[in-house]
Amino acid sequence: MKICPYCNHEIEERSSYCPNCNKPLLVNLNKIYRSINPLNESNNQPYDYDINDYLEENYDNINIKIRKLNLKLNKAETRGAPIGNLLIKKAGLFYQKRQLNTALKILKNALNYFSEEGNDLHLAICHNETGLIFEDLGFFNDAVYHFERAIDILKTLPEIEKLIQVYNNLANIYLTFNDLEYSYQYYLKALQVARDKNLLQYEVKISSNFIDVLIKLKQFHEASEILKRNKDYFEKTQDLYGKIISLNKMGKLNFHLGASYYEISYNQFKISESIIKKLGDNISVYVK
Image 1 (cartoon, rainbow, N blue to C red):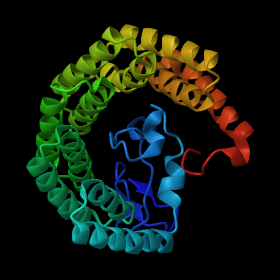
Image 2 (cartoon, helix red, strand yellow):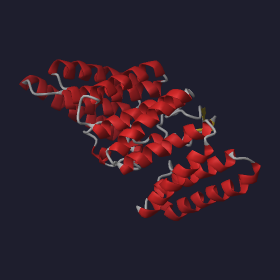
Image 3 (cartoon, rainbow, N blue to C red):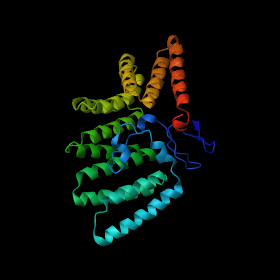
Image 4 (cartoon, helix red, strand yellow):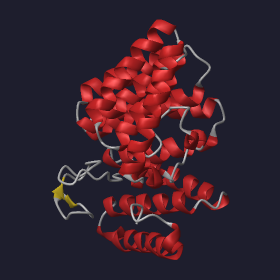
């Protein structure tokens, strides 16, 4: 269990929002980049650490955006103009408000719309977004179904990066309920596609998630080799946030190696903490 930083209410460790005050929480940096919605400009980079701005947005501003979007939807429907993209945007706004059931209803309408339109790419996007919401709600079987549908569609399209992301999402959810066999399998699929297409950024991101499975399976040597490569990559690219994640995972790995590695583990966590302190106001409280 952990404590909500807003209301001090006790909440589940993996909860993405507080059920008491309904404030959104960042629970896992490795799961930040899960959306494949091309309407979200931040998705151009595989490490979207600006998600905190997305989470912290004032609810009043979101309501204003929803009202404006409803006007656009009404005009588009009157003119017979396309409305699919507007529906996805609207679902995203309700997701920000943590009104997840409303977001699901809107995405269902979007799925029907894109199905009738024959727009496979946006069908895949809607299935992925729907899967993410079901995951947040704890309906894991429904989430798996929609991720698998997205994958089936994306395999037929030249959308390699999106396919990698949904493989990653599916691996994440299997890891959530500790099905290590399937989690391992889908992380490997994502990694293989990334390597085949020389998508180094995606390979690093997926392998960073994969480490959690390797540690649980006690495949410590492979986890260590990946962490060393990732740390070198983040140092070369001067990605301090990625370096923080790698150091924390190194600390976790060394802790699992036993008492003789505890001091190394402690030092790695301390180095990570010192980087966070140096960043000061330039890093969100959620990351801290």
